Image (cartoon, rainbow over all chains, first blue to last red; front, side):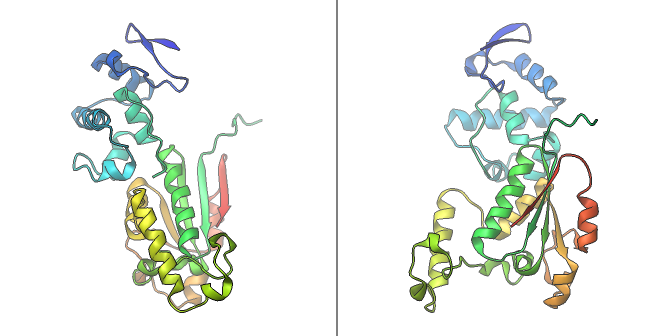
Length: 102
Length: 160
């Protein structure tokens, strides 16, 4: 389905995740963060960039892996994105929702 | 009328067993709740206390006797060393799928905001002291305290 995000027509799935990362830019990220009630700081952007890089390298993301990344620990990850951090952060980053149980 | 649409807001999990498979079930459920934005607390009681006992948590085993899903004859499962062997094999498989060990899992849950409580009655029964338990433990509480913490709408309770 399609959705207007930050004035652009963007393809998203039924949960609101972008289906084409090429349509993502910082303004789209800002708008998606706003929808999730997250105010983005430099720390958020560092984490989002890391997640995008991992996705590009086809790494399966999990809370455990993020915690061991050296970019952010699990406690801070929950502070930055208090509600469902991995789901919320990947949505803002414009990458698919990780199918992870841990 | 309340306007709760059935959404789960908090999972209160009671862990009463000390076998590896039950401990992992409780941990995955609690951690999985936090990952979805749901609050989670675990109440460790009876043999579940072994999972938060500093000296015991590294030595939890899979039950090889009375566990038909393991497809091992009961006589065989009772032989010395069988539990250790089955546990070793299971731990290897868990590592392959990026599953943390018990100690790391406790750290992950604590960092994720899962509250960990020990049952006072069971602590007294096993003669455990608070110092015997992991540092991440929030406290030792009674069943009444646990019910009090479970108040509210959208709270679900689960016995493992």
